[in-house]
Image (cartoon, rainbow, N blue to C red; front, side):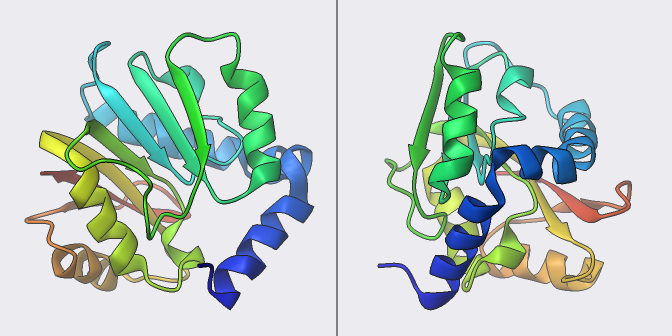
Length: 180
């Protein structure tokens, strides 16, 4: 069941639409993707989960099996147009705090600029941990205007992640690298 806050966020992104989303966020999101992917080693046979995938800007950068999840049907429609001609690209509409996925499946988990949109970000981070496989790696970002470096680190540790590395390389977001 969606909380009032989630409903508002879904409606906001559905109204924003993919064209405006891409115009507003494309360049800054692509820079974050490149920074995180520079630090992760992705193999072609790995299963990658992108929570909060938006319009699917990241799916073309992933060589492995890609699963994108987002709450917004409008943004997912745009992601679907990108995913259709590609192999091993899967999209689903869902809630980051209640992932509709099995335990221990994913090798790489990514979540960009999502936490500030959630009423229970620790719940979402715990869900990421739940669906991560053994020796999984993660790249998670959080808006600087919503989190200090210390508060971001604390929320990760409180969600069960040991020794996350926080990068101070993006002007908009803190970037966390985590090994499970």
